[in-house]
Length: 366
Image (cartoon, rainbow, N blue to C red):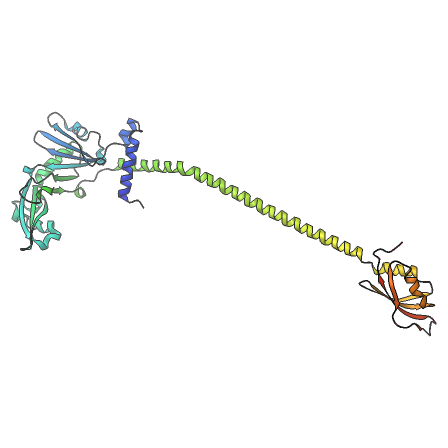
């Protein structure tokens, strides 16, 4: 995830890449330089040191005469292409403007050193606390005494206020009041101490609208750039998804059509099977009709039974013993025989018979 520092680095890189491609008029609005401008005010001149945040070093140093420039145009000469609203203005104090002194304090006070020293400002300087800005730094430690050597740098508030007021007349707001160096090489550690008397947190807030516009513009450009890269991919993905949906729908329709055709084939096959079986099996009516034509008129049937290919008939006849010959005259029947003995019915005077035969033909002869 990008944090604030990463976003700043990305913004600076992006601006640097776009500078050469942006027209001058647009560049003057969106791509003005940002950084630090340090001012050292003298009686007749002001020394300007300009630091660009991208280069992270001093890039320009210029001395401007106070007599040659009026207040109205001084800010323009000082900034020289830097965005006033996005550039830190630092007031640098010379060595003769700052009172410096090495004091000794208990080591236990190191954690809250500046606050502890503030209680003794009137003892170490001829000023009261409300009359000065000050800063401190540890320059040496006395382990055996458990004390610290502290470099105290003090500047009178009225002097700083006068200098800041002059800079404000030029249309600039001071963000920080510092001293470039203590210039006390005989004191170990002092060469690295740059006192800051007024920090940016206590300075007047600047209007960052243009900087916000810059960030917003860069954000829009980044979103457009991402859209140019991503949109074709999204579009292709949408087309691919639609094709997949169409293929899936076609596959479903083809599957339904195949299942329907198979079902119809099964129905036709079953219907043909039934017709085929029906053709292969003679009906009882057809068998009865064939027997009616074969048997003599003096014979009567009381029972006709068909099971698979076996036909059983029972009845009475004048000459029942001749019935087998009549039945086997037809190619429809074969293997006719009596089941049991022939008996005479006393009431009718006819012979009772019980005859079985096999069906061997599929069609009844005309």
